[in-house]
Amino acid sequence: QVQLRQSGPGLVQPSQTLSLTCAISGDSVSTTSTAWNWVRQSPSRGLEWLGRTHYKSNFYHDYAISVKSRITVSPDTSKNQFSLQLNSVTPEDTAVYYCTRGYLQGGFDSWGQGTLVTVSS
Amino acid sequence: QSALTQPPSASGSPGQSVTISCTGTSSDVGAYDAVSWYQQHPGKAPKLMIYEVIKRPSGVPDRFSGSKSGNTASLTVSGLQGEDEADYYCSSYTGSNTFLVFGGGTKLTVL
Picture 1 (cartoon, rainbow over the protein chains, first blue to last red):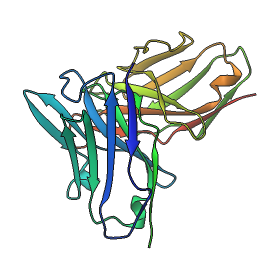
Picture 2: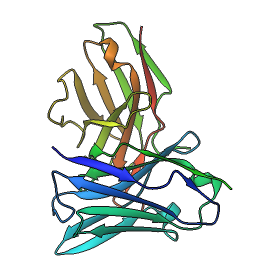
Picture 3: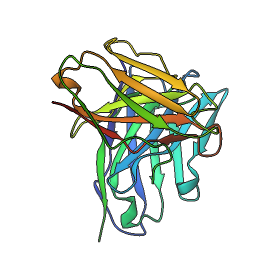
């Protein structure tokens, strides 16, 4: 059974970088059949897919247009985890952030516990 | 404004059936058999209930079923139980830079 454990700060200052990590147990970040995603949820924006990494001979990355200039999703094969970095955050980035495992055309079957990240000074 | 349109609320009595719709476009719901449905209880992470329009993950009761016609997907919950009271979200693959879009959610109340 796959388990995803998130870690990272719950408070980030405006213009700084939001960084979260998702540790995987029961599967591998290098699996070729699924992708590893970040999704956020806020009252104003609802559920929003942010980006993903997936492996097929190399690691590939896809990002939502809304955050493409600010986001990096990185795998760490040595620790079997993946991370999210979101640069130049504003209060609009305040949300609960989730890491997920998903099928390649969507369908997220495992979720982390969620991290409330507040952007405020 | 969400890319997929869901009714804000739905309700039914225990034992009844209720259907929640999810309307997209010919670029997402209508183009791919890649619609998913999620159940979310307050304070919890969403749980995958249906994927690829009609498939149920292991452990999801067969009271939950999915379908699609044109640009509209539907989730039907049969034999409503109190534990089914939750928010339900749909999503669809878009095959573009957007990759995936969600609906705004439907609050299901069991009367």
